[in-house]
Amino acid sequence: MKGFLRFGILIILFTAAFAALYVSYAEVRKKSLEKLSERQMLLAKQAVTGIEEFFSSYTNMFMQYALAPEMVNFDNEGKRLIRTLYTFNKRQFRAVTRYDENGMIIYTFPERPELVGTSVADQAHVKHILKNKEPLLSDVFMAVQGYQTVTLNIPVFDGAVFKGVLAALVDFEYVGAKYLGSISIGETGYAWMIDREANLIFSPAHGKNLINVKFEADKYPDSKELGDKMLSGESGFSTYTYDTVAGDRVIPVKKLAAFMPVHVLGNFWSLAVAIPEDEAYDDLSGFYQKMLFIMAVMFAAFAFYINVVFRMMKLSLMNTELAQRVAEEVEKRKEQERMLLQQAKFTSMGEMINAIAHQWRQPLTAIGFGIQEMGEMSKERHHTDEYIDDYVRFLMGIVMHMSETIDDFRNFFRPDKDRVELDIRRTVMAVHSIINSQFSAAGIKVTILCETPGRRYEVHSEKDITDEDTELYTVEGFEGEVKQVFLNILQNARDAIIPRMELINMGQGSVAVTITPFSKYIDIDFTDNGGGIKAEFLDKVFDPYFTTKGESVGLGIGLFMSKTIIEEHMSGFLMVRNVKDGARFSVRLNRKYPDITEG
Image (tube, rainbow, N blue to C red; front, top):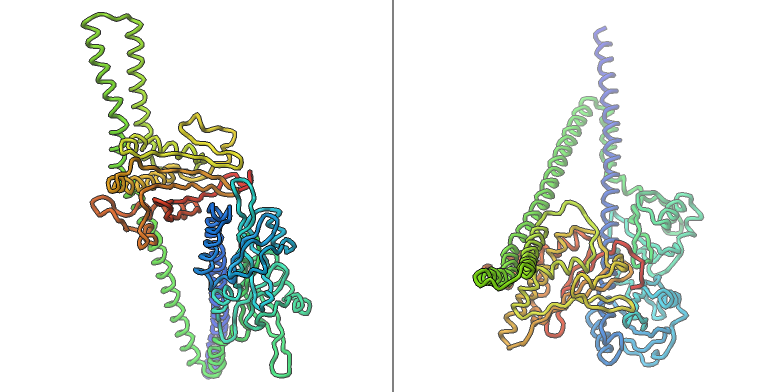
């Protein structure tokens, strides 16, 4: 009886151990697949981000070049710009071309004289940009020279007049090798990408052949389902079946894929990171064999199960601690950013106090003279009550102006709580009213110019700003932060201009603020004649704590925080480049009401 009881207990323990191990095995299998999927999606996201940033950066660069007068009028200097563009980017570009508003090639580099005067207006992407006059990236195609390529097209405008297109023949094989070719997962896993027509534009297994994946999708329902999801712009995880050649046989292979879309200039691709299903379970084969062995050796199986549970608990604890540390580091970074922003505001308070002094010096002098005048009039009694009333109103007007000045400065430092709609023209004018006296005293003239298609006007005061085109200049953000950025850029311009005026005996300094609305964004350019930024410093001006003024003058956080505010808080763009006699800081912000006018 006791033996039977012991045998029964052993059976129960064995069954319980096997059940527990099987549940554990299923959980480990699930988590392994989850981790594999996370890794696949991470690789896909990295590739997508790299491709999108690659084309975005070159689009922004080409748009800047397209604004250059020599590129608009296209003279010999325009040809020199194209040669420069190609020379510094020849690994990425096969050619850079400028064609006119009718699609006629007027210059290309590397130079091919036989192509000048040739029309490319019948090409699909050229037809599209000639019609819509917006930046465009073509579909991937096979060039006659035998390489895959894609064309980046940027419209060229003279004001509102369309002057043609600046185009680059981008080496798509370079893009694929850089962002997709290095992706490897498991033994044979790799990345592949299709265009909106389901053409396979990148695959290590197919080389340069632009085959259409719908042929495979017609054979296997799961492949069709994946293809439909990818072509509809979805992202996620899926399985699909694909034919693999093994010797003389064609074997259908089940694969696991993480997929997501790639959006570039209105074009659309979809990328997948895939691994054979068998390879995904390779790491579990040893665990499975041990589980079968444990079925025959109950106590060893039970001990192994305890070990597995302990390891899983330890792993879970480590993951929890890691997640907590990551959360703490993220919070620490946010707190540091808040401190830097506050520090930047405190740093500029000295500038504000100087500005208040400049704003108040003349009114206080006028009030002082007024009090003396009224004292003299009181002694001589040669005045009328009407004259006294007018004089009092005059002095009270000065006092009200000083009170409004205090309100301006108090509002400037008031912390932002909510995002609001901002008319960029009025925001620039508000900053200008704060620094105008200080800049005038230093001999620096600040001009504010608004440019829209068909209209160009200078803003001197609020009365020059009309309400009917407010939506053209409206963005959304934190008003105080935007003012802080504009103020910091203007103060940097002033600090560069004043020493140069003394060094070369320059008569007057100048800062031109140009506000230009486009179809989806607004450009605010600050151009000074302060001599520009040394070439070795251009890549460092936005680094935290970098300054050329010395620690006694600045902390070097102004431009770093300005870039953080514009790019992280407002999803915009801030850059700097040298121009003739000075530097140009360019701020690009997304419009609140896009597509109201052509840009």
